[in-house]
Length: 284
Image (cartoon, rainbow, N blue to C red; front, side, top):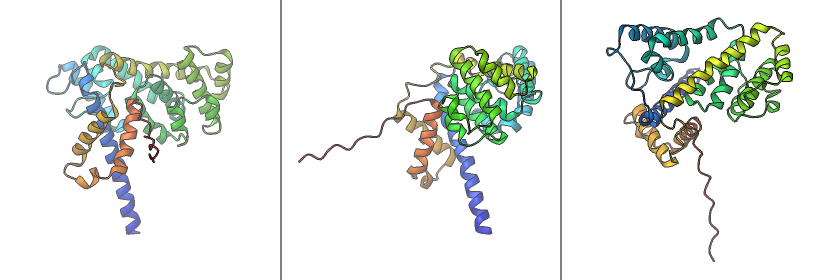
């Protein structure tokens, strides 16, 4: 029993540490691209401090502190921009809070829509934050790689529940064509019980979600970081590992785990991994 408990604790510790490494690497990879400096106490106005405290109190329990704060103690994602303009930012935060707490859709439904919007906008932070929430809401594990790849709606049928698949189909069509056809809208409405409010909440959820990556793309130079080479990302990962594990050279030397983390970083940063090198034929 003690051995099983110890193994479970090590596995949990590895998962938590991996999340920290990926967050560190994402932050390091985008440090030079940020146009808006991190805003943090005590260098805040009264209105900024009030919104900062409100975001921390409401978001820390949802996304976790390691996802909420950057290395300097500032806020990640859209929240730093909201603090920069607190009079507008507080209303965006209220809308986001209403999407979570006053939505007529179950979390498993609106999280599917949020992931589709995040993939469309190549929003690595949006995916990182909501993948965990979607998994917690009960989305099937097999659905995540398909959603991330933007798979056709037909491939998600049988993987997602019928109402989840209908939401995915509508969200994907809207992102790709900027329109929703009458058959798709009607099918989704039937799947959601014929409720107009649920359809309205679905559309407003996607609209609220889309503002986050649009803000991020405007605030960063080359957000997708396509100019990062695979070698540069290896350096970023090494720096992140050193920050997370300190002098633990044994873990840093574990190339298998390191490559797994590097592959995940490439995926979140939308960088094409180099193809495996082919072995050249032996010369007689």
